[in-house]
Length: 59
View 1 (cartoon, rainbow, N blue to C red):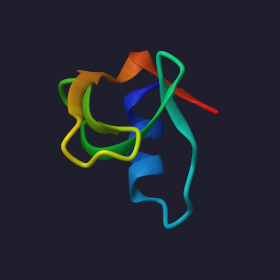
View 2: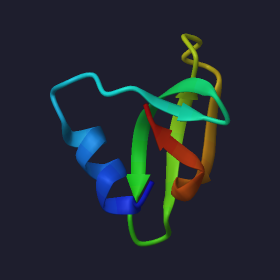
View 3: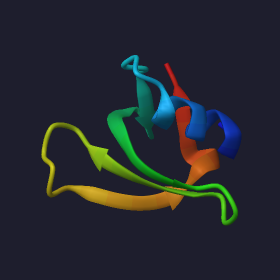
View 4: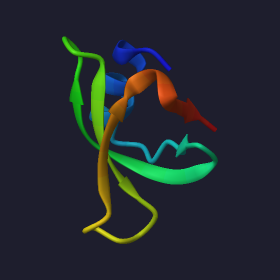
């Protein structure tokens, strides 16, 4: 995924499925300039990771 698409998903009022290494995630923040995103893994709001946006897949 590219940074602009990640930002569009983050800004969208719709729920768009995104995965990180096959696991469902929610995008919580997108840093377009650095190509990074903070995501919540699964349903645990305390399980967050900051990852390169190109590791995210839209499903």
